[in-house]
Length: 152
Image (cartoon, rainbow, N blue to C red; front, side, top):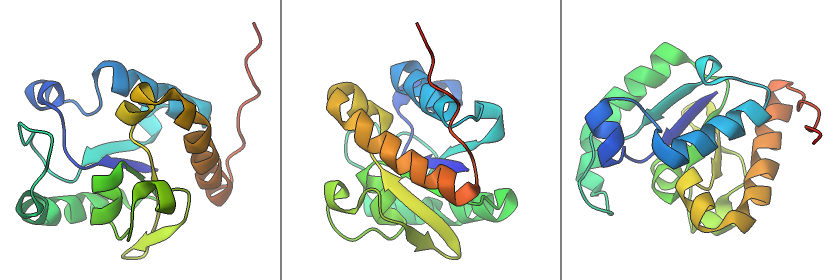
């Protein structure tokens, strides 16, 4: 599974490590809930450096697209999880993320599941249930079973 967001934040850019900080920890929990580890998935961004502001210009995404496509060809994931509206739109979603999340798309020949970014889940915890529904669709497509719920 390849997880992709639109661009790294400043901390990720400085450290050269994808998905760190509180959103990264939450993404790690999401991956673990799928019965996987961070070492079994591929984490990346469409843009390869932080834009230094909240919005990402289409030119930045276009300039980095060949690098992302090369990563995709090398990794050959069975599924892509597009985290956030920017990544979802760049990979073919048409419309607001709230409407297209949870629906399978295709990027090239790869299935794409758009869903909310972990950063958005921290701001709006009620959406965690929706993301879990999306991730279970990815799991079903890959033939993965959810681990049993933790007790206590």
